[in-house]
Length: 328
Image (cartoon, rainbow, N blue to C red; front, top):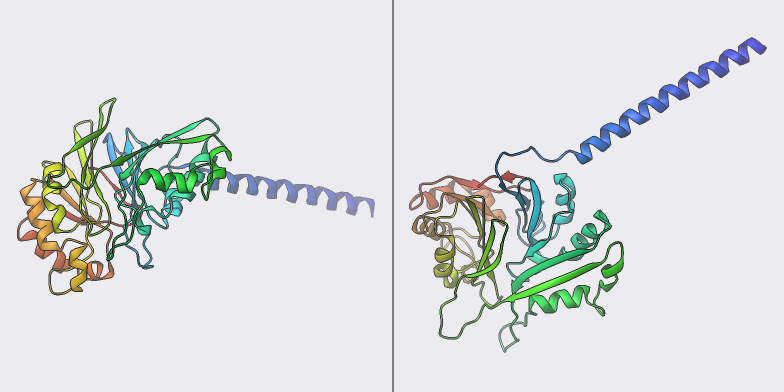
């Protein structure tokens, strides 16, 4: 009886040891998977697509991108719904992010800001200083809604009396340096502004046009490569886009509508059809096109979209997908 009990104790101990080893190995594997970054690139400038979709719940996250400099995420461009999850899936560290560029303040481009700022706060213990750039605001009129300025939005979200003001000292001290970019110049064409110029990094901005929503186009240059983000743009913003995108290596163009008359007429007052996308890319001597902010219409008729663009633009055309890593 004593020997049987001893054997049972030894067997139980061995089983416990074996289980502990298995659990440790599993935990190690899971930890490694979580910490493993996306495939390394030799390029010093890369873009991770966090969200390639639009406002509809179609399985894609809303518009959002991470720009990596020398392999580290430094710049967040837009923060559409679902991008919080995509950041986690990308497996990249958040500790280096210091710049946020907002093309405009529609919910499908800025709605995830609070969650992402909180994720940044819990990712490190030291003080966080975020510089945020975005459009100025506009007052309401009889036919259009009001839009706050970017500075006002950040205050409404994270200021002392803001909806998420507690985040200022939740995990690490968080502060914001916000710059409103002028989008309305009565009687004068928009001008390109240099908003960041440091350590070989240049970020430039120019007012775009998205019907009633103040909007901004951004161009990022680093280590001899460049990427330009159109945001949502209609025909009234095309001249500005041609100016700032001239010679860019990668143009990320929001592609929501088909050529007329295949999309609802109202959408052409907000977005750019494929034929015009091709013309702009050709006129600006763009190297590559990445179509993003995809609607079901453009996603389901890719061949037609490519064919229309190819009438004017002979360069590579790609369709974005959540999680894709693109090197300009």
